[in-house]
Amino acid sequence: MLLREAEIVAAAQAGDPRARERIVLDHQKMVYNLALRLTRDPHEAEVVLQETFLQAFRSLRRFRSGSSLKTWIYRIATNEALQRLRRRRSGKLVNLDELEVDPEQDLSYAARALEGNPHQLLEDRELKRRLEAAIGELPPKHRAAFVLVDIEGLALKDAASHAGTTLAALKSDLHRARLFLRDRLAAYLEGRHRD
Amino acid sequence: MTERRSKRPGPASPRTRGPKVDSKRAAGPARREEKPAQPERCREILRRLCAEAGKRESSPFCREVASHLKSCASCRAQAATLRGTLELYWCLEGREVPRAVAARLRKSLGLPKIACK
Image (tube, rainbow over all chains, first blue to last red; front, side, top):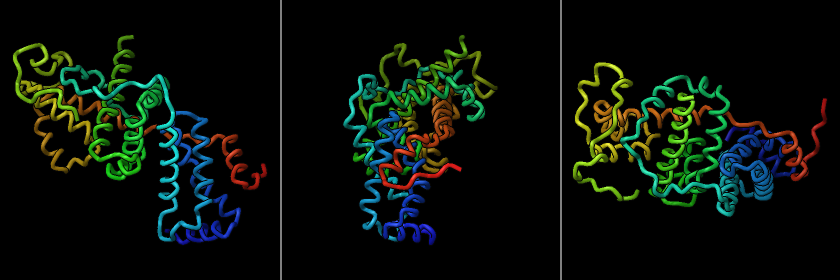
């Protein structure tokens, strides 16, 4: 932990509102985006944001110096978002349990279209919208695997621990999530090419 | 991982003829060297590729599949599109916390209002 961060945490533990404000300002964007990606619902994301910091400040005295404040807050936020995600029911989710690779699928056009600079490709607003919408179609366990590993960059083992599942199950969920998102993207690219 | 598909070669059928290769689209002279299709081998490779696409290129897994990818246009397209999809997601930028959301957060935490300049 950096000295500056240690000082901020110590001051926040002593009840200094400016130190607490600093902690919120430094981490709110990370928490909000993680919550938004996992819940796909701005209202839920706001609840997760509030619950995360309320919980963090309630248990700040138990925070051990030497740990990373960011990692600690991140874990609280992930747990809160995943709890909400599991509780929520949605009728629009796809069933990915049977999704498998089809080696005969013709992906040659999509492969060429994706050779370009990703930032340039993302200038297509519809493409961007569809990428974000596709995550929302993933069932909770697949979404958690994809967001934690591929977006947030957690190691597979850590993601499995966060998601409360086994490493093997997480790998399987991740595999199907990637396949589904790729298929959604390829279908859009093919359709755009035909139009 | 499901075990719905046998790894043994099955009877000849449209599903076992191997990956489709679009002759007009496939690029370069390397195509002439491509080996006969092995659909079950492709499926196994791709299952693992999907599950472990985040691994570094120097890993034993990546070395193992590299030779297969050289000889299989369909798997190359699968790998390229999976990687391309992940790259797009990596490039999606996070959103700023909306002002109203940030204001409600501060209120819920009992933090003082930020004075506008």
